[in-house]
View 1: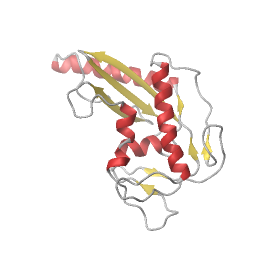
View 2: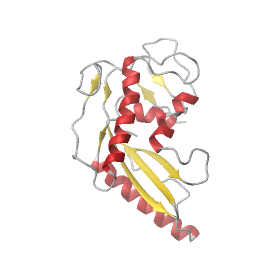
View 3: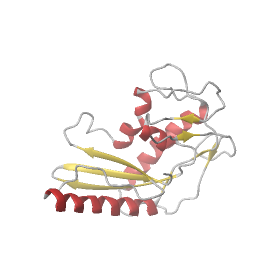
Length: 197
């Protein structure tokens, strides 16, 4: 089982995030193919959740308690490099599905390239919540399931397989995201990558 850790140490403030946040330099000014308004919305939603961690206001699921205060949390920025990798992975998955099943639409998530974490969502796939915004779905995991905290409040927060998407989107050292989307038979497929495995 994968163990994702979130470790937070206050260092530097940025213009968008309060003290305790680190702002990385962007590798591009706007997405190559992904809709710019959507990429901006994705990044904002992720940074808003990170802000809750930094401020110590992120609820730990339905427990009523907050997670420990986040520190040294890097601000998420759009990455054209990761966008290109997501585009390639999504195209490759479409190709695999066509060859294997003679199906034109993928039913499985693409594999995330080494050194990245992948996030997959099909919009309009007859699954409960499939019409919701992908980032909202991934981040809302924390609203529905709690993480078992360590007795020492200064210890690493470990997700232990719970809330995989949420934990990887707010983890302190993930600072870049890039996404690809494709449409097929009235469905939209979104695949995103962050810069940490």
